[in-house]
Image 1 (cartoon, rainbow, N blue to C red):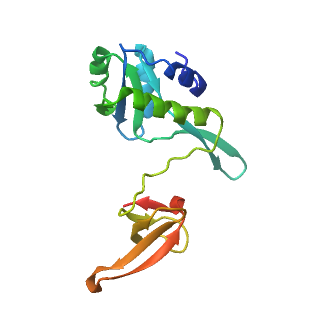
Image 2: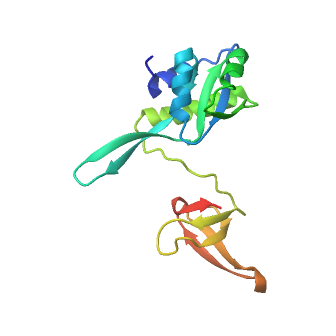
Length: 178
């Protein structure tokens, strides 16, 4: 069965029917495409937002399509079909968004950005007060707490024993949540 491209999925999302609901399939590690193949064989509608990743080898470049949200597949089915999907070996958990309209709208916006070949990447939801670790550059491995989120992140490196701290500014893409 042919897997629809992201443009087709965006068009399909514009109509939210009442019979089918959106479910978020939390899958086992690296099983997004396996569960998607199963769903398509069974005739279930799925959405897997992907982005192009380029890997450079010695003599060539290879393009890969990687899931934008690793570990998640979005399924648009009725409740009976959802119960059949729950029994699949690749699934860890099947979650139902409480606000179907809001979920469909947000998913549509992400897929629209992906269909325009915009540079879309996973952005961890980093908030003030959250512990983060710097993952790039000379400060790689340093952990701190986000104290400001406008522009560059301002991270507080605390020395709790003496109740003091130092502040550091880094780009948001250089940190990961701890």
